Length: 86
Image 1 (cartoon, rainbow, N blue to C red):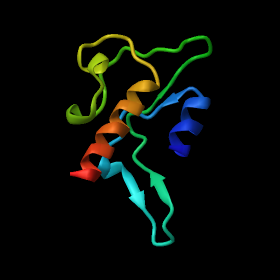
Image 2 (image 1 turned 90 degrees about the vertical axis):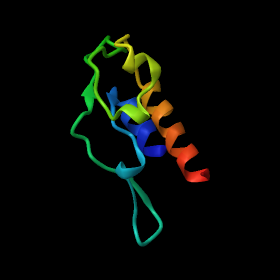
Image 3 (image 1 turned 60 degrees about the vertical axis):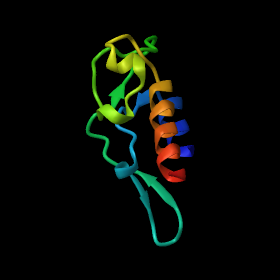
Image 4 (image 1 turned 45 degrees about the vertical axis):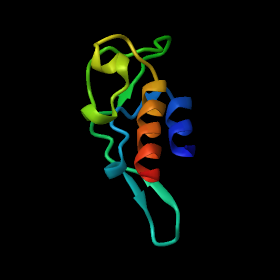
């Protein structure tokens, strides 16, 4: 979550948080990868509207084409959490 916090503090939405993009290093540290779909929010803008990501991890507002913000990444991370306990 520190990586997402860093991104969101800097007005960046990853937009493709999923288990395949979370890497576990041999030293036990975790890294967030694949920034190919990221969005940099312009100053004064807190929402994005283009649809991007992987369908199974997309927040409902992304799927329906509604404006979304960094919380869409938190939704996707929640899906990763569900995958981990299955």
